[in-house]
Length: 407
Image 1: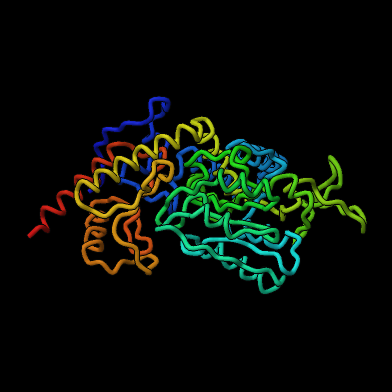
Image 2 (image 1 turned 30 degrees about the horizontal axis):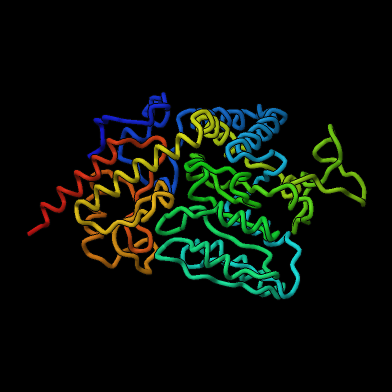
């Protein structure tokens, strides 16, 4: 049964009718932002207008390019970066690979990562670099689902060129102490690259304060947009030293007011900063959607969103623990994100071997509580459109399920 009666409680600083802004929340209890974020109504309307223009052949390409610049600036503002430090990508994987292939590697350099809590797409690029460039890939064990920053620091030496971590672990969704690692990397001139797939748009991220050198994300999760696009942040000091593995017209500086199809000469100058990584043409349908989503997120502010979602996640985690479930939500408040995982970790990507977990998962789905299984655990992820009513509903359904199956 859909969640049609909502008694919502949002952060006091947020003054939006979430059901009007995100109509998808009226038909279910949506707790799967870790997989896909809900599309705002304004974004759907803007996409319809864009598709109408394509259908009638009345597309204004000049306006589309202005929109592209605006969206680049909006994402930059969201993470406290300069628009010149932002490149458009297809997804997180492309952003990570852009950095991997643009770094100036030397045989004997090393890279440090924690494969146990990384998405595979932040492992394979480095194995590829290792094989092609003679670079050592050093791995560090995770600490029960969390990044062990101290262990990563201890593994570094004077040949460490890059460290990479998720801002929030792929599973079970614990926040990384990026700022501590960033301070170390900055002091040693080590490139710190983060996979922000699970945090961008949901958790407050300040790349300057956290001393991040590179950040890759996609648009379909916390940024409440669509598949097929992402952003790459690369700090200007690093980007200006890098040579892209692929080069297209938009990565070449021909000066102002030069037609996009113009060819300069056999000698060329790369665009400043991360703009050199742009490969034309742009995914204008997704940019159209992202423009509206980023406006909503930017108007609210990620500090407020962060506070809101962590509070809800903490409430859910504590409630589920009181019901006797095994919850992984961070032993320290600083580790908590918008994600709560329940159960016991296993090797299955989107399945669980535990019969009770599987039954509870189906019970919640049947009640229109949309969530996922990841590595054997039930996974719930909050965003700005979620409320205390969603927490209450999950706890009530779990309690009812326990009562029904206690015998």
